[in-house]
Length: 156
Image 1 (cartoon, rainbow, N blue to C red):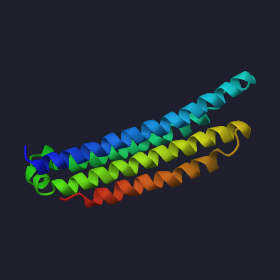
Image 2 (image 1 turned 120 degrees about the vertical axis):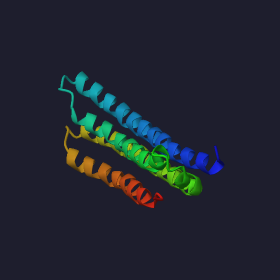
Image 3 (image 1 turned 180 degrees about the horizontal axis):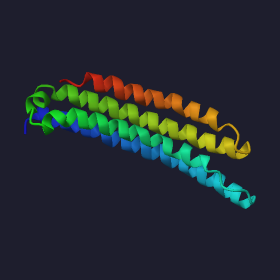
């Protein structure tokens, strides 16, 4: 296998791997906060707030964005157009690495906002879900822009 093809494929694999790490970190942060909020609600005899599930799951989308980018980037190799991958291996590596880092930090920060949102809602009697989702959506937009802009850079 030629070095350019290897670099291109590795870069696109990094996009998915780094995004999955970011989603895991974000989901972990929000999930821990949700568990603490549920424990507090259970101890007080209150029903457990389902909204924390929404806040916990939101960082998953960045992994989906990276999967789509990886699939589109590798499509040339899948359908037998290895010349594209060979010619643009460095470009694909850069796109994959940039996308992976963009999705990693977007998902991670989204999870940290989700964790704070769980705590805020727990202390605020469940109020503010819409505001919390908007705050998380702003950092989601960074991941979405990174996905779209880098997707548009993939050589055809």
